[in-house]
Image (cartoon, rainbow, N blue to C red; front, side, top):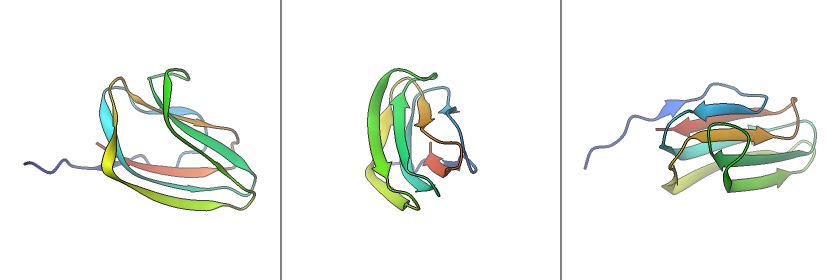
Length: 92
């Protein structure tokens, strides 16, 4: 079985399409000085089905590894509730 090459989104701080086609999320790192709600949607815009979501408290930090990776059929869209967050996504 071939191992996919995982790309890194760079540091994101707003709603954005991480990938505009189908793919998978292998990991996500999140931090914020404010309270944060974050979702990964199966879409190319702010809609579609939330496949993963979490709320972080003020000053929260999270690094999550998904094994197996989270599959996205349409696209990978990051939806965040603040612009003070720092989010990095590992995807293929």
